[in-house]
Image 1 (cartoon, rainbow, N blue to C red):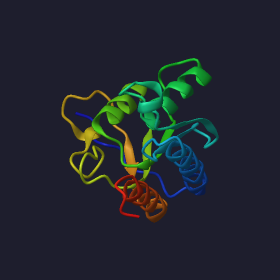
Image 2 (cartoon, rainbow, N blue to C red):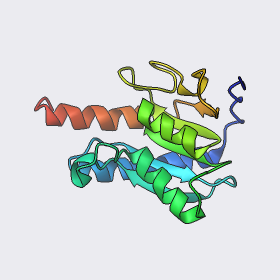
Image 3 (cartoon, rainbow, N blue to C red):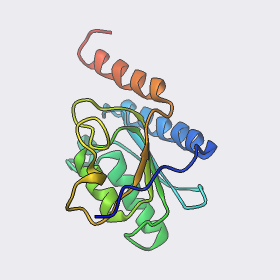
Length: 163
C-alpha cells in the first residue's frame, strides 16, 4: 500500500482559493443551501473551477460543492482525472466527496472547518488511508477555519430560529 504523501509547504494560493470558496458558500446560503463552497486549483495554482452546495436546487443528493467543482474541472481539462490539482473546500469533505477526489486523482485537499460529524479526511476517518483505495492524497485543514465555521454556524442558527 502506498503511503499518504506529505502535504506541500503552505501556499498563499490556498488563501485566495479559500476566499473564493467562501464566496461560493455565501452564494449557497443565499439559495437556502448549506453554505459550503469549493474550488479546484490546477497544478500551477490557477482556479479552474468552483462549486457551491446545490442538492436542494438540483434535487440531487450528490450535488455537494466538491462534486460540482470536480465535475467542472473535468470539463475544463477534458479529463475525469485531475492529477496535480488541489481541491479547496470550506468544510472537511464527507466520504462521498473524498471518494470522488480519490477517483479524480487529486494531489491534495485543503479545507477550512473540520466536520466532527461526517468529516472523512481527519475527523471521523482518513479516506486517503483506507486500505482498499488505489490513490492517496495529502490534506491540510484549518485554512480560514474561523470564517468557514462561523458561516456554517450562523446559517444553521438562523435556520433553527436561534439567531
